[in-house]
Image (cartoon, rainbow, N blue to C red; front, side, top):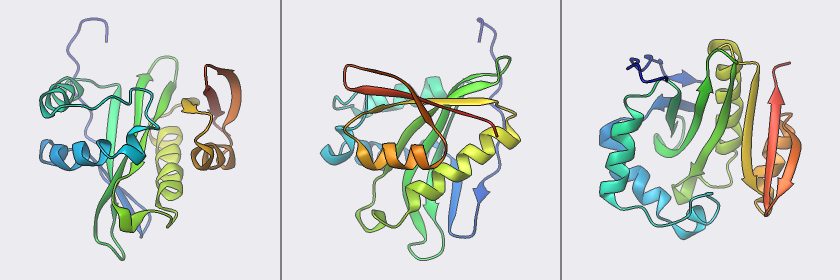
Length: 174
């Protein structure tokens, strides 16, 4: 961002008929903090410490002023008709046309195991390549997170490095 304030882009919700991805709003913070605080989710985050409400609000304040970080709430709009998780494209290098993918979690128990994370991954990758004009998306995942690694491989991510229990994977635009 090179010290210059940049206005965050407005991004319309992304839908496929079953799920909608919409940008996080301040009113979502209690919900996303509750999801992130679940041990079964938190253990897969690279920074898996407990986050306080104050820390979460401070993160959101900084996030709101960045044009290289977009966190989407995943809403299941067909059956559950409610927010169920989150997913993100961040550290966007607009000139280099690349970014990181992550912060993926399904926080609502009744939404687990229904393919929602997979659908959200497909939607956000398509959005990153087609709408944001990116050529490359990378991620870092704990190598023991086999369900996530499987999804990422299915979407064409290739492992480029493994170290300290982490896999770095990259997907290049088709």
